[in-house]
Length: 269
Image (cartoon, rainbow, N blue to C red; front, side):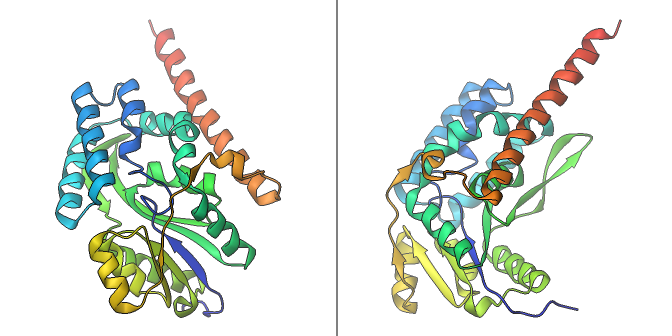
């Protein structure tokens, strides 16, 4: 039985909507430092960031990027990935967050709405970012894990129509009235997600989404002020303090687990 639809929510794409870069590719240097990728992969990621920033990512580019990244992560140690993200989260992501997006998130929370981040990037990257931003839920791509490593297969790809299906399912579970809910994105590929709510907004839209927004009379927003997130959020509310504590404790926990594992291996004869 579905919950009664009695409240609204706000759904945010992540890349170029909340932050100014691809969240996954932004971690290429920490992944290199952690021994997960080689220098050539870092260069390819930097080039992909340039293309993404210059023109946005169309469906063909996204498919190529997805295939490249899933092939790249096959065999990676899941804990090393999570540790790399936790240790560098604020250094990498903090300066990339749009001030306008942070304010919108705060406004929606003040109005009593849940905030949900919906991203094609992997959950290992998106979930810590969501915690840092105080999001109530995260919808992200999930990779198949086996014996603590990625197989290179995708369990769920949060992209295109899948985003719309996922937010519809979440709305059923949590009682969101989608007709009175909000959605924000920059890309044509997120048109299904935007169309799934009654209050869609195109943010920094690519050419194709701008055309759709004009045709559908969707409002267009321009975000252009990346800020240091910690200078924006004073962490004054109990929820913000709890979020900050969970991120710190999560990072410390992962680092501790790796250190303990290393010590145990070193003790073996």
